[in-house]
Image (tube, each protein chain N blue to C red):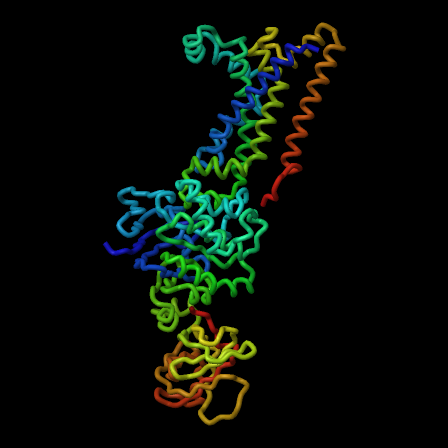
Length: 362
Length: 224
């Protein structure tokens, strides 16, 4: 049988839309599936159901060759027996235990010397040396997150489940830890499922993204796929960023990074190191279209391209421009007429550096 | 001062408190964690001794453990002697009488343990029983101490139930409160005063302990 998680569940909470999620995820070494969607879309419920902490009224959850839940044949495998690592949103560290006590909590089956060895290994991996005897309340947000992750992975789970792993942190720490968390997950070499409502986190952490809305899984695909080619208007609205393309930083000066994307260069705000791989993310409404041959503007990016498609969206028009990579712009009908744009006409797409978001992708 | 009565009372209160710690924890766990819709029916039964006149409670216990009841007959069959007007009968009555004083603080303490911590423990492979001992109890110590101390203190002062179930047998069922009553009846105010003062001091000391624990005067580490 294929190494995959197959979920088909229905769960109702009083006064809310029923959650009815169908999702199959092929497990590979160290790959992360991000469940992405607005709050209330049911992503946490799906994660908790996989952990065995929520019991859907109807459905099945299969993990590799085991059935964890099958309401029809009354199979309900307890969370203890699922061998998963679960990290809740606010970490839920045990206040009555030290850092070492928290990490070793799930290692009850090991002999005390093996347990000590495993805890020691994790203290090093998660850079917690010197804090072994600290209580959770004495730690910073970032340290608490590392302890929670270390505790979850200590018993060598088969699957790691992270619920909004960064949302308990303040904004600057969150940005710093995004990349750190991804490299930790890669080092751990564990398949993981991560819930987030933040698109930058989804892009940083996910090898695959499942977009959820109104209790349903709407689209599953690679980050670029889901963001640049949303299956329908609902997905497009949820992701909110129309152009996502991979690039490399080639120049770096005073927080302004120059990025090479398919032979085109773009400038964006970001202090990523030269040579590092990034996702370049541009919202369609941040793209300004100009006629070729116009003068200098304050925008740092001027890309010459050709219009490839024009799709009306209510009062707005979505214009796709081929400028080394497909770029999506959203303009008004009036602007389109003033510029007299048709498919095939040349155009300049301009963006301020601040509208070019760089998401590190190591 | 009647040291024999004091001895009986302390023995009764200590045993009651210890037994209530053991049987009160599973009841409180159930009260705190059960999602059964009719849970309040049981909760009300547990709380009944709080509002019932001790004589009424004592009367029912007396009937329930009497030689004509199945419970009384069972006990007599096993032990060979009847339960009423013995220390064991009095202990049984005290446990029922002080049940809410143990169960309610225990349940409140269990209620305050964040369910997310419990869930985290489960996902780490700890069974419900293991989670109870490794996580819930350490986080509930203040409530457990409060429950034990309150049931001890409440047993110290019981009068109506003792009179109904235990009678007034020197060295067996004559507790401090009965002794004080006897002394007053015999117009020995000096004797009654001494014993009453002793009870006052003990009760005050016990309550001091409860409040100190709950204010975390002796807290060793900062708790959330």
